[in-house]
Length: 209
Image (cartoon, rainbow, N blue to C red; front, top):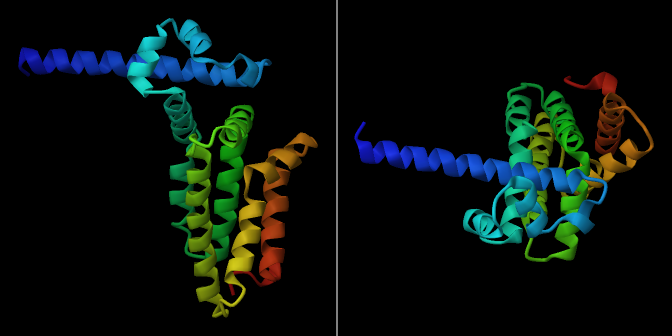
């Protein structure tokens, strides 16, 4: 390796470490008791041990930082791996069950931070991360639903209606409502899976036939 390439590699590694430190500081502030009231670029910079300019150089803006936090939560929550494993299941009903569980586990991994990030998305229209991820979730649910209907030979006349209902059931808001009542995560998974199949009009005893 030439010296120039080595130095570039070192700078990139240093930049990645700083970026990770900033994201981690932002996540901790989001999960702190003060929550949104204490979240500012100044406080993130202080907690990460960097300057505000460094944060702007890394993320461009406060919205860019929030997007970076969402991306990091997605990676640490393992949602891509869980969804990939779900679609490896040959039975489309099992696939949908696994998709429901994947989203529940993801919501649960960073529940407080996700709730506050979604609140920020409502207050700041430039922060599109949460909405974009909901659109990706819709694509996943739509694909899962399509597989079930094809497998069962069902008409698609109620497809959009059912899809909208499944989106509601797999949303963070549905999970958060159940979690706030103290329902254990496995029970939440089971309840949402049951409601999903009730929406489909399926008898669970007949699944996979």
